[in-house]
Length: 120
Image 1: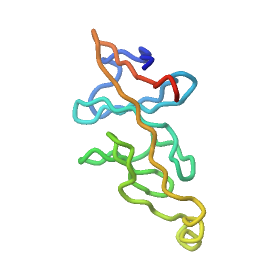
Image 2: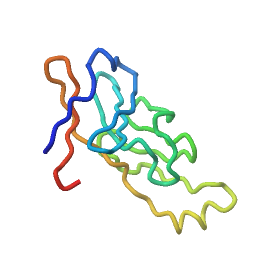
Image 3: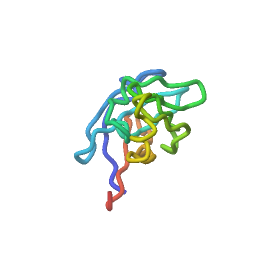
Image 4: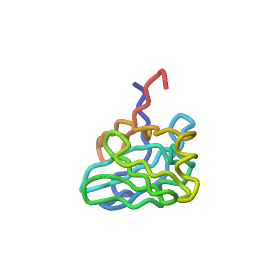
């Protein structure tokens, strides 16, 4: 595991989010209820910027474009919404559900660190 210092903990207060680059990847940091989560910055369905997505009280993030729901902790698809409404079912058959990438985080001496596996 390669750990990268990405941000000061003070720069990500509760409820905040920020996109950072880690090992050439755009990663979205979300401070939800005092826990730091790191997920892929783009939706796995249509590439929307997840930074603009709604974070729910139970720790999910909703894609701002097509409204699929992903768990912040695991990246698991909680609800896959075919989009656009009229042809969504056909496109949904083409665009299968894909988990949102997640990355481990830690806070050490006031700094937020994100881990990337060597094989990723």
